[in-house]
Image (cartoon, rainbow, N blue to C red; front, side, top):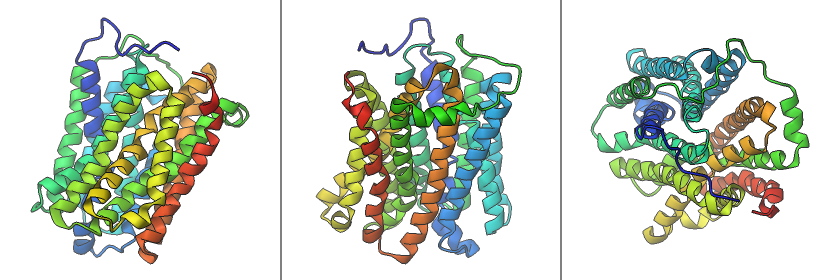
Length: 397
């Protein structure tokens, strides 16, 4: 199979970096509350389980927003960069409201659900903006943009480490400013691309998409592999501060959390390059298998010497995220052309619903059991994902 071209001629060099930086800035909203949870729990007397509830609230908002945006064809009927701008500014306002309103649990849950809705107008819409420019080379662009998403997820933890003496309110306000700036950058630096598809009517999700997901064997393999990946991904992010907290405290702990998430952004880009030679199924399968192995050996490495503990944590962080663009590309490639939009919308929504369940489950388990007993269960999804990927792994090329 010939290598996919990395770039097309005639595309301004600023386009992909501008989209990636905007994506990074907007998705910093995703885990902003998690980076300040210890201080927020102390100041607002939130229960220990609040971390899981608030993270699940974002995921629920993202699912709802994704479905509504798809049904109303919002990013088709309006310029996607303006949708991105509005959602970035709205998400920034919600982050600021977290500071300005009394931080009660019901208020925070409502704000996080609304933030998830805004993220549905940032992450998928950023992908659509990139697709409007890259008729070829989209796989490479996708790896860069998912990498930017992962770095954006890590950014609030880096802020927490850098501003060790900052009040939690300062961290949230900085995130709000960054998200707003990302929306402005997208609106000013990235015009609508020449390959952008526009529709002027609402778009219904096709019920055929659910049937084809199950009956089409290659598509089913990539979708079930993605579901296994989603079982682990966000639950790992939620548990990561507790994993690091067993060994480090203060700013050092936040730096390790930042590094373990941010390295996944590098892995997304590197995986995209490797996929051009070895194929997305093999690269994604190898990464999901590696992340499963990291979960299974966790009981022996939580207290291991630093020279073993650090590589284990960073490899886990790299592989738990690095397979994301491969599964997205495989699903888009294997879906029937007429149903790509419906398939991707439904698959993403189901995947994030799985993450809601595992975030809630593993947050509760971590409050009742030692981490050494909890972490191996994260491997259940990846192990099943590798098993389901077998038809694609055996395929030639």
